[in-house]
Length: 135
Image (spheres, rainbow, N blue to C red):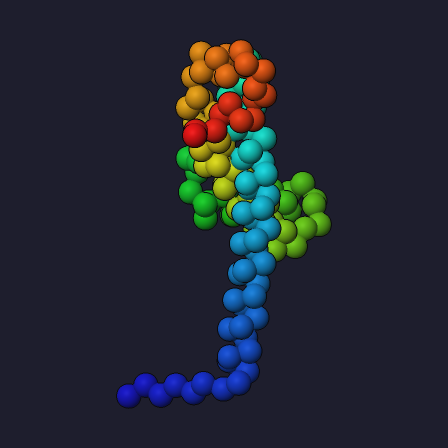
């Protein structure tokens, strides 16, 4: 029979881990969303010679499994000689991974409004921001 003990120190350890997870999630989502917004607008509006390299890099981040990205980032960090904590590496990797998917969402949203609709909205002197909203 297996016996388990649960002490206050175990609870404190799990609560610290939950706090670390929430902190990591906050920074990864914040960074990934910000980068995804910038890259998504660039991919939707930029010429092909800017769009193609961004798309290729983001496709790599979407294609490689997340665990492999963690391993590669920690390995390259040591090879290059960067002095980053494991928490910082995790934030950067998760932010890049999130931005790769967020970029596709933002790009699709920008491209969802066809150019004739944007031009028609500009005729009565409506700025670009309200023209993209659906009423």
